[in-house]
Amino acid sequence: MSPNTDAAIPAALAAPDAPDAPDAEDWLVDAALAPLADGSLAPLYAGAAAGELTLPFCADCGLALELEQRACDGCGATDIRWRPVERAGTVHAVTLVHRREPGLVRVTEPYPVVDVELTSGHRLIMTTLTATGSAPAIGRPVTVGFRVVGGVAVPAAALSTTAALSTTEPSAPTAPTDAATPDSPRATGTAPAPVPSETEVSQ
Ligand SMILES: [Zn+2]
Image: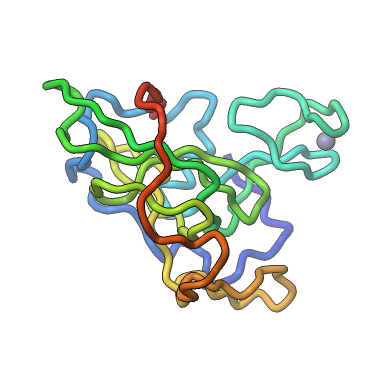
């Protein structure tokens, strides 16, 4: 499927971070847990393989849709258009999963599952690009990179720097990031709030 690109994608956002080699081992899960790359989310995985974050929008009114959404909340239309979006957002919620079971989950240390609020208007749940035993702070900027699970690239959150969030799109409504500002009201940068431990990783 060829994603519609009627909205110009800034050059800085066009696939600067192609995933690692397809045969690389993921830090979190065994290759047997790779998602079905040619299923209903095929546009997402095809984009991810090229380093793009491709997400669904209502073809009629342009509203950002959930990955599995079949009808638009805004206008009821059922035509969906997938297109690349800016790979940037902030941590909306986070769960630190404590889990130790030998087998398909490779790590024995806690790992974060992050609900990222993207600048595109989507919310996307993912883990981090690399192993970390702590949860990123709510409100912290992230960029979206890609893990590779069994040869399939899947979105993963990388903690952003200010530079990584910069954009060449002059009309982009991106506010200057204040990630480096210690008194930012939501960037506490310290321990995560207590979280439930039963969250399922759905990728
Ligand atoms: Zn709509």
